[in-house]
Image (tube, rainbow over all chains, first blue to last red):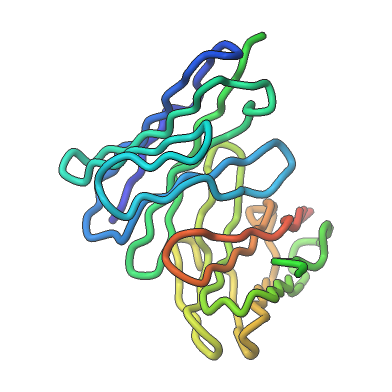
Length: 108
Length: 111
């Protein structure tokens, strides 16, 4: 089976940097993605790591280490609009399986 | 392009009733997925399809059936609704192995 573990909640301050972790116990997957979901909305794609290393898109970066079973999403220069839930997801055998998500709270 | 659309947006059913949720995408994507989302549970995969005429079971398929008669449409059916199926249902599509595009969701309540 596959299991993706994320902290249920993380709190950070506006303007700061926050890291959201995702650890997994699965192998042989094509890649790992991160999604953002605001309350009442649909998930939206943030980033995808097919290979180990860091991918950067604007204020967001995502890192993957397959050997360590570990990924993280890094959000820089936090803004209040970044308050949302963040999900990691793996694509394995055409199934895309999600973690339970991390709720990010941002303090002014 | 409308992207991914879902019909209906809201629905209330009584236990034992049946219904079909429709998902449509206009991006010519091969892969389509149905998820349910419950508080604290994240998104759980119900069924998915890798192309027209194909379907496969996900993590939580019991109580649901699907059909993919046309490439652009993916239907999710509940034959006999139960209160445990009260949830928000999301459809998604992808043209490859990375970015999924989600519909706006269907909020279903089963009384």
